[in-house]
Length: 111
Length: 116
Image (cartoon, rainbow over all chains, first blue to last red; front, side, top):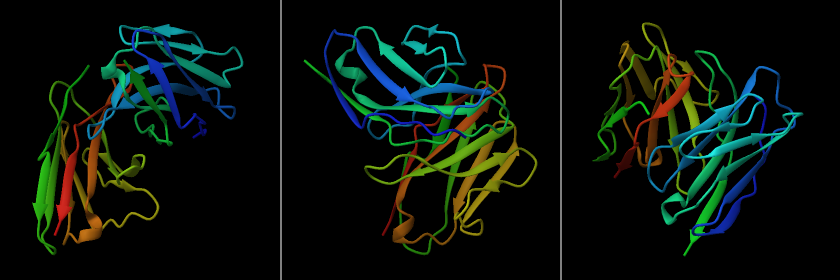
């Protein structure tokens, strides 16, 4: 599985957009980009995933560059409850496709 | 999203005791489930892949005789920490692969194991 690189921490003001970057320069053609987040002492929560097109759901938007070597997760209006560690993971979509977690980005949303 | 239930949420036991943790997919069937452990201030580490009706696949360095995995049905996988010792104290988390929901993995809430 391809590796990802994320900044260790970021701050964001409440109500503003949070843009979390992720580099995955060795991604393969059959690997998707997944985003999860983990709020302290809880299990990870699925946010969004995509292959090459931009994706949006009720939680966030995912922007993937044309060469697929990087992506950005956008939380359009961050709230204090969005404070968490955000993980960007690349994964083959198959029955046994593992999620290998890196160190993630610790996002702090401040009032 | 789909619901994965993990039980118990917290367990405190004496050294030498075996501890069983259950992971259930409540509203979907999961032929594949995964077990992770997480130490404080660290990321999740994949321990093993649990396959319904067959033996689990363990990651390198994980002792299969220590961490016994059983996936007897399409909605239940169990992790048994055999003869637990203080160094096994950790946060254990399971996930279930939901094939019909775009192959998303959904996670349980985790089990905090403390071995005295």
